[in-house]
Image (cartoon, rainbow, N blue to C red; front, side, top):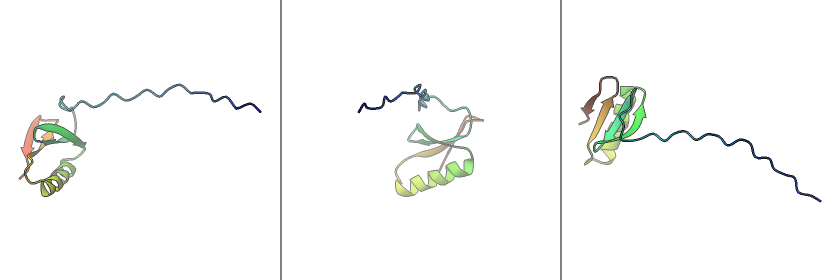
Length: 76
C-alpha cells in the first residue's frame, strides 16, 4: 500500500517583527525603564497595565508614551 502524498500549500508570509527602538505612530505604549513595551489603544488601558506593573515591581520606571503627541507621562 502506497503512502498518500502530502501537498504543501504556499507558505504564509510572516509578519514583520515590531521593532522596539522605533516609536509607534498611533496608540499608547508603555515604556519600562526607557524601552517601548506593550501597545494599547486607550490611555486608560495603558495606565491600568502600568499600575499593575508598578505594583508588582516597585523599582521600575513606567511611562505612557502617547504616539499622537509624542509625549511621555510618568506613572507614580
